[in-house]
Length: 94
Image 1 (cartoon, rainbow, N blue to C red):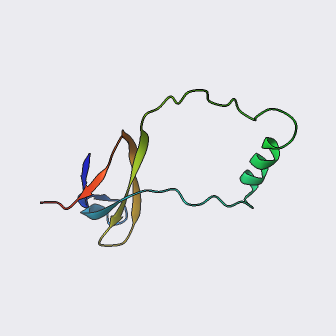
Image 2: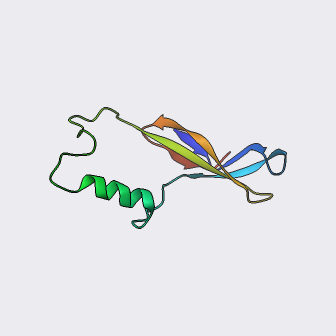
């Protein structure tokens, strides 16, 4: 799916419709010393079985792509809910 690099949409901080630059959201690197990560690692190790059952076959063909919109007026960043797409392409608006 082709997504324009600039979208005119509502900005909650400006309280009006403004132009937003569009990026594809990418999750950051997980912190190994965060409490949840330490708890997860602790549960995974040992002689016992996996914490959750291992997936035998892959169920989904696509990932949910989240769009990151940044307001050009104030710099406020908001996320647009993920949609299942095989391929996303950012294109210049005509």
